Image (cartoon, rainbow, N blue to C red):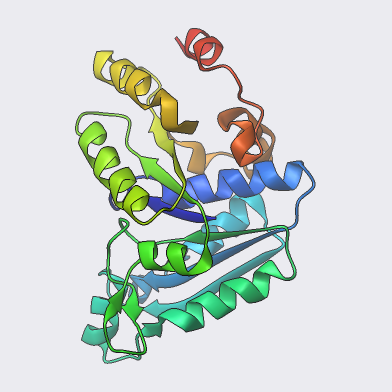
Length: 234
């Protein structure tokens, strides 16, 4: 399963951790693969490290790392490092799929950000990776203004490639306003979950116990009634 987003900073890593926690609570063996990690020059933990802290997947792998906080292919070029080749990423994910029940592949930025190069020298994206793997996608979206357009564009791009996809709201505000509620209503037909804002700062034990309640059964959670959820949150 590929975890992508409508943009950068929408909560892909925390959603990846939540799906990991819910799946492992359901008894699945989970691997998390990050094809391209950028911004490593700061020395801060990477996205796989964050998922490990929150959800402790059985396996966590980062395939390529680059110092500058740019799109992975651009970061490789700027740093004069070898870009990640598409089929190296495909082979790595398939290798983990042989040993795990679920492999979560977390992208970088949005769906069409250039991740690396094909053998032909053409750039490839997370969308290309999903197609090559035959994997469904989870689109992480914002809760507020602008999310409907960005989400629709991302879902349309996936649909054109015959990639099944659903949506998770990456950070549902503690005090939602009218725009949040109306967006939620519009997203419900494709909605697979919603995480509370600040979930990534939770104690890992609390995070793991809470995660199934944020996700529908399609993502190994227990959330099955959005009306009841909205009434409880409201």
